[in-house]
Image (cartoon, rainbow, N blue to C red; front, side, top):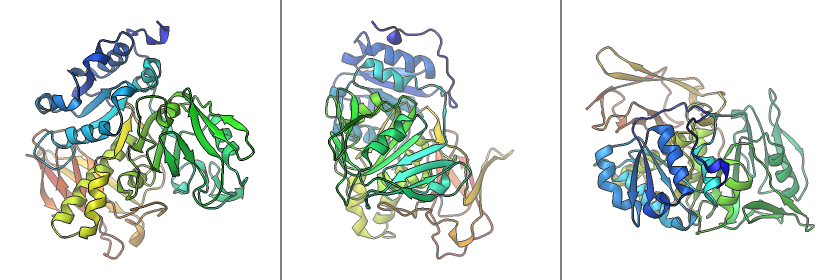
Length: 446
Protein backbone atom coordinates (compact mmCIF):
# COMPACT_ATOMS: atom_id res chain seq x y z
CA UNK A 1 0.00 0.00 0.00
CA UNK A 2 1.26 3.51 -0.81
CA UNK A 3 2.32 5.39 2.33
CA UNK A 4 0.06 8.25 1.16
CA UNK A 5 -2.92 5.96 1.73
CA UNK A 6 -2.11 5.04 5.32
CA UNK A 7 -4.49 6.74 7.71
CA UNK A 8 -2.48 9.34 9.60
CA UNK A 9 -3.31 9.80 13.29
CA UNK A 10 -2.86 13.55 12.91
CA UNK A 11 -4.02 15.75 10.04
CA UNK A 12 -1.49 18.54 9.54
CA UNK A 13 -3.99 21.05 8.29
CA UNK A 14 -6.85 23.06 9.71
CA UNK A 15 -10.26 23.97 8.32
CA UNK A 16 -12.02 27.27 8.70
CA UNK A 17 -15.22 25.33 9.35
CA UNK A 18 -15.16 22.39 11.76
CA UNK A 19 -18.68 21.04 11.76
CA UNK A 20 -20.12 18.58 14.25
CA UNK A 21 -23.05 17.99 11.89
CA UNK A 22 -21.14 16.35 9.04
CA UNK A 23 -22.09 13.12 7.27
CA UNK A 24 -20.12 10.92 4.87
CA UNK A 25 -22.06 8.75 2.42
CA UNK A 26 -20.40 5.68 0.95
CA UNK A 27 -21.45 2.44 -0.73
CA UNK A 28 -20.75 -0.82 1.06
CA UNK A 29 -18.39 -1.86 -1.74
CA UNK A 30 -16.34 1.34 -1.36
CA UNK A 31 -16.51 1.35 2.45
CA UNK A 32 -14.95 -2.07 2.68
CA UNK A 33 -12.38 -1.61 -0.05
CA UNK A 34 -9.03 -1.48 1.77
CA UNK A 35 -7.62 1.60 0.05
CA UNK A 36 -10.84 3.58 -0.44
CA UNK A 37 -11.63 3.05 3.25
CA UNK A 38 -8.76 5.43 4.00
CA UNK A 39 -10.51 8.20 2.09
CA UNK A 40 -13.62 7.70 4.22
CA UNK A 41 -11.55 7.57 7.41
CA UNK A 42 -9.76 10.83 6.56
CA UNK A 43 -13.08 12.68 6.21
CA UNK A 44 -14.55 10.98 9.26
CA UNK A 45 -11.59 12.05 11.38
CA UNK A 46 -11.28 15.59 10.03
CA UNK A 47 -14.95 16.50 10.53
CA UNK A 48 -16.08 14.14 13.31
CA UNK A 49 -18.45 12.87 10.65
CA UNK A 50 -21.11 10.21 10.85
CA UNK A 51 -20.55 7.56 8.17
CA UNK A 52 -23.70 6.22 6.49
CA UNK A 53 -23.45 3.19 4.23
CA UNK A 54 -25.79 2.32 1.34
CA UNK A 55 -26.01 -0.68 -0.96
CA UNK A 56 -26.97 0.64 -4.42
CA UNK A 57 -27.72 4.37 -4.18
CA UNK A 58 -27.34 7.26 -1.71
CA UNK A 59 -31.10 7.76 -2.06
CA UNK A 60 -31.50 4.83 0.34
CA UNK A 61 -30.25 7.12 3.11
CA UNK A 62 -32.91 9.85 2.87
CA UNK A 63 -34.56 8.89 6.17
CA UNK A 64 -31.18 8.76 7.93
CA UNK A 65 -30.30 12.21 6.64
CA UNK A 66 -33.63 13.57 7.84
CA UNK A 67 -32.82 12.27 11.32
CA UNK A 68 -29.33 13.72 11.40
CA UNK A 69 -30.13 17.05 9.68
CA UNK A 70 -26.45 17.64 8.77
CA UNK A 71 -25.03 20.84 7.38
CA UNK A 72 -22.37 19.05 5.32
CA UNK A 73 -22.67 15.82 3.32
CA UNK A 74 -19.78 14.24 1.41
CA UNK A 75 -20.20 11.25 -0.88
CA UNK A 76 -17.04 9.17 -1.30
CA UNK A 77 -17.48 7.47 -4.67
CA UNK A 78 -15.39 5.39 -7.02
CA UNK A 79 -15.66 6.56 -10.67
CA UNK A 80 -17.83 3.61 -11.66
CA UNK A 81 -20.48 4.76 -9.16
CA UNK A 82 -20.94 8.16 -10.79
CA UNK A 83 -22.30 9.45 -14.12
CA UNK A 84 -25.18 11.95 -14.61
CA UNK A 85 -27.33 10.16 -12.03
CA UNK A 86 -24.92 11.23 -9.29
CA UNK A 87 -25.91 14.89 -9.56
CA UNK A 88 -29.61 14.09 -9.72
CA UNK A 89 -29.47 11.85 -6.64
CA UNK A 90 -27.56 14.34 -4.51
CA UNK A 91 -29.64 17.36 -5.47
CA UNK A 92 -32.82 15.48 -4.63
CA UNK A 93 -31.44 14.22 -1.32
CA UNK A 94 -30.59 17.78 -0.36
CA UNK A 95 -33.88 19.22 -1.59
CA UNK A 96 -36.11 16.58 -0.01
CA UNK A 97 -34.48 16.50 3.40
CA UNK A 98 -37.31 18.56 4.82
CA UNK A 99 -40.55 20.21 3.72
CA UNK A 100 -39.22 23.42 2.19
CA UNK A 101 -38.22 23.84 -1.46
CA UNK A 102 -34.53 24.52 -0.83
CA UNK A 103 -31.42 22.38 -0.51
CA UNK A 104 -30.76 21.65 3.13
CA UNK A 105 -27.03 20.95 3.26
CA UNK A 106 -23.78 21.72 1.49
CA UNK A 107 -22.65 18.63 -0.37
CA UNK A 108 -19.78 17.39 -2.47
CA UNK A 109 -18.48 14.24 -4.12
CA UNK A 110 -14.95 13.05 -3.29
CA UNK A 111 -13.60 10.83 -6.06
CA UNK A 112 -10.56 10.26 -8.23
CA UNK A 113 -9.03 7.92 -10.78
CA UNK A 114 -7.93 5.92 -7.76
CA UNK A 115 -8.09 6.20 -3.99
CA UNK A 116 -4.77 8.04 -3.79
CA UNK A 117 -6.11 10.79 -6.04
CA UNK A 118 -9.38 10.89 -4.08
CA UNK A 119 -7.41 11.38 -0.88
CA UNK A 120 -6.10 14.67 -2.29
CA UNK A 121 -9.69 15.95 -2.37
CA UNK A 122 -10.41 14.53 1.10
CA UNK A 123 -7.24 16.14 2.51
CA UNK A 124 -6.81 19.27 0.36
CA UNK A 125 -4.55 21.13 2.80
CA UNK A 126 -4.91 24.56 4.30
CA UNK A 127 -7.65 26.88 3.11
CA UNK A 128 -7.04 28.52 -0.27
CA UNK A 129 -6.96 32.27 -0.78
CA UNK A 130 -7.43 32.80 -4.52
CA UNK A 131 -5.15 35.54 -5.74
CA UNK A 132 -4.64 34.59 -9.41
CA UNK A 133 -7.62 33.77 -11.61
CA UNK A 134 -7.16 32.39 -15.12
CA UNK A 135 -9.79 31.64 -17.75
CA UNK A 136 -10.53 30.48 -21.25
CA UNK A 137 -13.26 33.12 -21.45
CA UNK A 138 -13.73 36.67 -20.20
CA UNK A 139 -14.66 37.32 -16.56
CA UNK A 140 -14.75 40.23 -14.10
CA UNK A 141 -10.97 40.50 -13.79
CA UNK A 142 -11.23 43.67 -11.72
CA UNK A 143 -12.59 41.52 -8.86
CA UNK A 144 -9.38 39.45 -8.66
CA UNK A 145 -6.00 40.53 -7.32
CA UNK A 146 -4.44 39.41 -10.59
CA UNK A 147 -5.37 37.21 -13.52
CA UNK A 148 -5.58 36.50 -17.22
CA UNK A 149 -8.01 35.22 -19.81
CA UNK A 150 -7.91 33.94 -23.37
CA UNK A 151 -10.82 34.71 -25.66
CA UNK A 152 -13.07 31.89 -26.82
CA UNK A 153 -14.53 34.18 -29.50
CA UNK A 154 -11.56 35.89 -31.19
CA UNK A 155 -8.28 34.24 -32.13
CA UNK A 156 -5.28 35.89 -30.51
CA UNK A 157 -7.24 38.00 -28.03
CA UNK A 158 -5.87 37.80 -24.50
CA UNK A 159 -6.05 39.97 -21.41
CA UNK A 160 -4.16 40.13 -18.16
CA UNK A 161 -4.22 42.06 -14.91
CA UNK A 162 -0.99 42.37 -12.93
CA UNK A 163 -1.08 42.67 -9.15
CA UNK A 164 -1.93 46.25 -8.30
CA UNK A 165 -2.69 47.08 -11.93
CA UNK A 166 -5.70 47.26 -14.22
CA UNK A 167 -6.86 44.80 -16.92
CA UNK A 168 -5.11 45.32 -20.25
CA UNK A 169 -5.11 43.58 -23.60
CA UNK A 170 -1.90 41.75 -24.48
CA UNK A 171 -0.61 40.11 -27.65
CA UNK A 172 -1.65 36.48 -27.82
CA UNK A 173 -1.09 33.58 -30.20
CA UNK A 174 -3.94 32.60 -32.51
CA UNK A 175 -3.58 29.10 -31.09
CA UNK A 176 -3.77 29.55 -27.30
CA UNK A 177 -3.10 25.89 -26.41
CA UNK A 178 0.56 26.19 -25.43
CA UNK A 179 -0.01 29.46 -23.57
CA UNK A 180 -2.86 28.00 -21.49
CA UNK A 181 -0.78 25.00 -20.45
CA UNK A 182 2.24 27.21 -19.70
CA UNK A 183 0.16 29.51 -17.50
CA UNK A 184 -1.24 26.60 -15.50
CA UNK A 185 2.09 24.78 -15.26
CA UNK A 186 3.71 27.92 -13.84
CA UNK A 187 1.94 27.07 -10.59
CA UNK A 188 0.34 30.41 -9.78
CA UNK A 189 -3.27 29.94 -10.97
CA UNK A 190 -5.62 29.38 -8.03
CA UNK A 191 -8.89 29.39 -9.99
CA UNK A 192 -9.41 28.41 -13.62
CA UNK A 193 -12.66 29.14 -15.50
CA UNK A 194 -13.65 27.66 -18.87
CA UNK A 195 -16.45 27.79 -21.41
CA UNK A 196 -16.80 26.66 -25.02
CA UNK A 197 -17.48 23.28 -26.63
CA UNK A 198 -16.67 20.27 -24.46
CA UNK A 199 -17.54 16.70 -23.59
CA UNK A 200 -16.37 14.33 -20.85
CA UNK A 201 -13.29 13.71 -23.00
CA UNK A 202 -12.32 17.01 -24.62
CA UNK A 203 -12.40 20.81 -24.46
CA UNK A 204 -12.20 23.23 -27.39
CA UNK A 205 -10.97 26.62 -26.14
CA UNK A 206 -11.87 28.26 -29.45
CA UNK A 207 -15.66 28.58 -29.60
CA UNK A 208 -15.97 30.69 -32.76
CA UNK A 209 -12.60 30.01 -34.36
CA UNK A 210 -10.22 27.13 -35.01
CA UNK A 211 -7.90 26.52 -32.09
CA UNK A 212 -6.12 23.56 -30.52
CA UNK A 213 -7.96 21.02 -28.42
CA UNK A 214 -7.59 19.56 -24.95
CA UNK A 215 -8.08 15.89 -24.15
CA UNK A 216 -6.77 13.40 -21.61
CA UNK A 217 -4.88 10.13 -21.32
CA UNK A 218 -4.22 8.07 -18.20
CA UNK A 219 -5.18 10.93 -15.91
CA UNK A 220 -3.18 13.62 -17.69
CA UNK A 221 -4.72 16.65 -19.44
CA UNK A 222 -3.14 17.02 -22.90
CA UNK A 223 -3.33 20.12 -25.04
CA UNK A 224 -2.86 19.37 -28.74
CA UNK A 225 -1.94 22.49 -30.69
CA UNK A 226 -2.80 23.06 -34.33
CA UNK A 227 0.81 22.28 -35.30
CA UNK A 228 0.43 18.83 -33.75
CA UNK A 229 2.62 19.49 -30.71
CA UNK A 230 1.17 18.00 -27.51
CA UNK A 231 1.52 19.99 -24.28
CA UNK A 232 1.15 18.05 -21.01
CA UNK A 233 -0.54 19.62 -18.03
CA UNK A 234 1.46 19.18 -14.82
CA UNK A 235 0.06 21.76 -12.42
CA UNK A 236 0.34 20.48 -8.87
CA UNK A 237 -0.63 23.59 -6.89
CA UNK A 238 -4.09 23.21 -5.28
CA UNK A 239 -6.76 25.07 -7.20
CA UNK A 240 -10.47 25.17 -7.98
CA UNK A 241 -11.91 24.69 -11.45
CA UNK A 242 -15.12 26.16 -12.86
CA UNK A 243 -16.05 24.81 -16.31
CA UNK A 244 -19.30 26.73 -15.87
CA UNK A 245 -19.96 27.19 -19.59
CA UNK A 246 -18.93 23.71 -20.73
CA UNK A 247 -21.17 20.81 -21.63
CA UNK A 248 -20.52 17.54 -19.80
CA UNK A 249 -17.20 18.50 -18.19
CA UNK A 250 -18.59 17.54 -14.79
CA UNK A 251 -19.66 14.07 -15.87
CA UNK A 252 -17.58 11.10 -14.75
CA UNK A 253 -18.68 8.25 -17.04
CA UNK A 254 -17.11 5.46 -15.02
CA UNK A 255 -13.40 5.93 -15.70
CA UNK A 256 -10.70 8.19 -17.13
CA UNK A 257 -12.21 11.49 -18.27
CA UNK A 258 -11.57 15.22 -18.25
CA UNK A 259 -12.87 15.82 -14.70
CA UNK A 260 -10.74 13.10 -13.12
CA UNK A 261 -7.73 14.20 -15.17
CA UNK A 262 -8.11 17.82 -14.05
CA UNK A 263 -7.97 16.48 -10.49
CA UNK A 264 -5.00 14.20 -11.23
CA UNK A 265 -2.69 16.40 -13.32
CA UNK A 266 -4.24 19.83 -12.80
CA UNK A 267 -4.18 20.14 -9.01
CA UNK A 268 -7.97 20.58 -8.84
CA UNK A 269 -9.35 20.14 -5.31
CA UNK A 270 -12.86 21.49 -5.91
CA UNK A 271 -14.84 21.71 -9.14
CA UNK A 272 -18.34 22.60 -10.33
CA UNK A 273 -19.52 21.35 -13.71
CA UNK A 274 -22.45 20.18 -15.80
CA UNK A 275 -23.12 16.45 -16.14
CA UNK A 276 -25.24 16.96 -19.29
CA UNK A 277 -25.02 19.32 -22.29
CA UNK A 278 -25.69 22.83 -21.00
CA UNK A 279 -28.01 25.22 -22.84
CA UNK A 280 -29.76 27.38 -20.22
CA UNK A 281 -26.84 28.20 -17.98
CA UNK A 282 -28.35 29.54 -14.76
CA UNK A 283 -26.79 26.91 -12.48
CA UNK A 284 -23.37 27.30 -14.06
CA UNK A 285 -22.68 30.92 -14.96
CA UNK A 286 -24.44 32.24 -11.88
CA UNK A 287 -21.73 30.80 -9.64
CA UNK A 288 -19.52 33.65 -10.88
CA UNK A 289 -22.09 36.20 -9.63
CA UNK A 290 -21.49 35.03 -6.06
CA UNK A 291 -17.95 33.64 -6.11
CA UNK A 292 -16.00 36.04 -8.34
CA UNK A 293 -18.10 39.21 -8.37
CA UNK A 294 -18.43 39.28 -4.57
CA UNK A 295 -14.76 38.55 -3.85
CA UNK A 296 -14.13 37.01 -0.44
CA UNK A 297 -17.77 36.92 0.65
CA UNK A 298 -18.38 33.24 -0.16
CA UNK A 299 -16.21 30.17 -0.45
CA UNK A 300 -16.88 28.00 -3.50
CA UNK A 301 -19.21 25.57 -1.74
CA UNK A 302 -21.29 28.46 -0.41
CA UNK A 303 -21.31 30.30 -3.74
CA UNK A 304 -22.52 27.22 -5.61
CA UNK A 305 -25.21 26.61 -2.98
CA UNK A 306 -26.26 30.28 -2.93
CA UNK A 307 -26.70 30.20 -6.69
CA UNK A 308 -28.68 26.98 -6.43
CA UNK A 309 -30.97 28.40 -3.76
CA UNK A 310 -31.47 31.39 -6.10
CA UNK A 311 -32.50 28.98 -8.85
CA UNK A 312 -35.01 27.21 -6.59
CA UNK A 313 -36.39 30.57 -5.43
CA UNK A 314 -36.76 31.66 -9.05
CA UNK A 315 -38.75 28.51 -9.85
CA UNK A 316 -41.17 29.48 -7.10
CA UNK A 317 -41.38 32.95 -8.60
CA UNK A 318 -42.29 31.33 -11.93
CA UNK A 319 -45.05 29.35 -10.22
CA UNK A 320 -46.34 32.55 -8.62
CA UNK A 321 -46.42 34.33 -11.98
CA UNK A 322 -43.77 36.90 -11.05
CA UNK A 323 -41.17 35.51 -13.48
CA UNK A 324 -41.87 34.62 -17.14
CA UNK A 325 -43.13 31.07 -17.54
CA UNK A 326 -40.68 30.65 -20.42
CA UNK A 327 -37.92 30.29 -17.79
CA UNK A 328 -39.48 27.19 -16.25
CA UNK A 329 -38.03 24.62 -18.65
CA UNK A 330 -34.48 25.92 -18.35
CA UNK A 331 -34.60 26.26 -14.57
CA UNK A 332 -36.04 22.77 -14.15
CA UNK A 333 -33.30 21.37 -16.38
CA UNK A 334 -30.50 23.15 -14.53
CA UNK A 335 -31.91 22.18 -11.13
CA UNK A 336 -30.24 18.74 -11.15
CA UNK A 337 -27.49 19.08 -13.76
CA UNK A 338 -24.47 20.54 -11.96
CA UNK A 339 -22.24 18.66 -9.55
CA UNK A 340 -19.74 19.72 -6.90
CA UNK A 341 -16.53 17.71 -6.56
CA UNK A 342 -14.43 18.02 -3.43
CA UNK A 343 -14.84 18.33 0.32
CA UNK A 344 -17.59 20.93 0.92
CA UNK A 345 -15.92 21.91 4.22
CA UNK A 346 -12.77 23.14 2.46
CA UNK A 347 -12.55 26.91 2.34
CA UNK A 348 -11.44 28.24 -1.05
CA UNK A 349 -12.40 31.85 -1.76
CA UNK A 350 -11.14 34.92 -3.59
CA UNK A 351 -8.89 37.31 -1.75
CA UNK A 352 -11.00 40.22 -0.44
CA UNK A 353 -11.66 42.68 -3.22
CA UNK A 354 -14.02 45.47 -4.28
CA UNK A 355 -17.61 44.94 -3.16
CA UNK A 356 -20.53 46.99 -4.43
CA UNK A 357 -22.33 46.66 -1.13
CA UNK A 358 -21.42 45.69 2.43
CA UNK A 359 -23.29 43.23 4.64
CA UNK A 360 -23.36 42.58 8.37
CA UNK A 361 -25.13 39.91 10.40
CA UNK A 362 -25.70 41.06 13.98
CA UNK A 363 -26.88 38.78 16.80
CA UNK A 364 -29.21 40.75 19.09
CA UNK A 365 -29.68 40.25 22.82
CA UNK A 366 -33.22 39.08 22.09
CA UNK A 367 -31.85 36.10 20.16
CA UNK A 368 -32.88 37.65 16.88
CA UNK A 369 -30.52 38.39 13.99
CA UNK A 370 -30.31 41.53 11.86
CA UNK A 371 -28.99 41.38 8.31
CA UNK A 372 -27.94 44.85 7.20
CA UNK A 373 -27.03 45.73 3.61
CA UNK A 374 -25.43 49.08 2.76
CA UNK A 375 -25.24 49.90 -0.98
CA UNK A 376 -22.00 51.47 -2.13
CA UNK A 377 -22.21 51.99 -5.88
CA UNK A 378 -25.42 53.93 -6.43
CA UNK A 379 -27.64 52.55 -9.19
CA UNK A 380 -24.85 50.15 -10.19
CA UNK A 381 -24.88 48.48 -6.78
CA UNK A 382 -26.96 45.44 -7.74
CA UNK A 383 -26.04 45.12 -11.43
CA UNK A 384 -23.62 42.46 -12.70
CA UNK A 385 -19.94 43.36 -12.95
CA UNK A 386 -19.54 41.21 -16.08
CA UNK A 387 -22.28 39.87 -18.37
CA UNK A 388 -20.32 37.25 -20.33
CA UNK A 389 -22.17 33.95 -20.35
CA UNK A 390 -25.80 32.95 -20.00
CA UNK A 391 -28.46 34.00 -17.48
CA UNK A 392 -26.12 36.52 -15.87
CA UNK A 393 -27.13 39.11 -13.31
CA UNK A 394 -30.29 39.62 -11.30
CA UNK A 395 -29.26 37.15 -8.61
CA UNK A 396 -30.86 37.66 -5.21
CA UNK A 397 -28.68 38.59 -2.26
CA UNK A 398 -27.93 35.62 0.01
CA UNK A 399 -26.44 35.37 3.51
CA UNK A 400 -25.77 32.17 5.44
CA UNK A 401 -27.04 31.87 9.02
CA UNK A 402 -26.27 29.49 11.88
CA UNK A 403 -27.86 26.14 11.11
CA UNK A 404 -31.29 25.64 12.65
CA UNK A 405 -33.27 22.57 11.63
CA UNK A 406 -36.66 24.20 12.26
CA UNK A 407 -35.67 27.11 10.05
CA UNK A 408 -35.72 30.88 10.37
CA UNK A 409 -38.55 33.35 9.88
CA UNK A 410 -38.65 36.98 8.83
CA UNK A 411 -39.75 39.38 11.56
CA UNK A 412 -39.42 42.74 9.93
CA UNK A 413 -37.70 44.91 7.40
CA UNK A 414 -37.83 43.73 3.82
CA UNK A 415 -41.00 41.66 3.58
CA UNK A 416 -39.90 40.09 0.28
CA UNK A 417 -37.02 38.31 1.99
CA UNK A 418 -37.09 34.51 2.28
CA UNK A 419 -35.49 32.47 5.07
CA UNK A 420 -34.89 28.73 5.39
CA UNK A 421 -32.76 26.37 7.51
CA UNK A 422 -29.46 28.22 7.26
CA UNK A 423 -29.80 31.16 4.88
CA UNK A 424 -31.75 34.30 4.11
CA UNK A 425 -32.42 35.55 0.59
CA UNK A 426 -33.45 38.99 -0.62
CA UNK A 427 -34.64 39.56 -4.22
CA UNK A 428 -32.33 41.75 -6.27
CA UNK A 429 -34.07 45.13 -6.68
CA UNK A 430 -32.55 45.58 -10.15
CA UNK A 431 -31.17 48.71 -11.81
CA UNK A 432 -34.50 50.55 -12.19
CA UNK A 433 -35.43 50.76 -8.50
CA UNK A 434 -34.01 53.67 -6.46
CA UNK A 435 -31.27 52.35 -4.18
CA UNK A 436 -31.96 53.05 -0.49
CA UNK A 437 -29.14 54.07 1.90
CA UNK A 438 -29.49 50.75 3.74
CA UNK A 439 -31.67 47.66 3.92
CA UNK A 440 -32.36 45.76 7.15
CA UNK A 441 -33.93 42.32 7.55
CA UNK A 442 -34.69 40.98 11.03
CA UNK A 443 -34.99 37.25 11.65
CA UNK A 444 -35.54 34.77 14.46
CA UNK A 445 -35.45 30.99 14.79
CA UNK A 446 -38.78 29.31 14.34
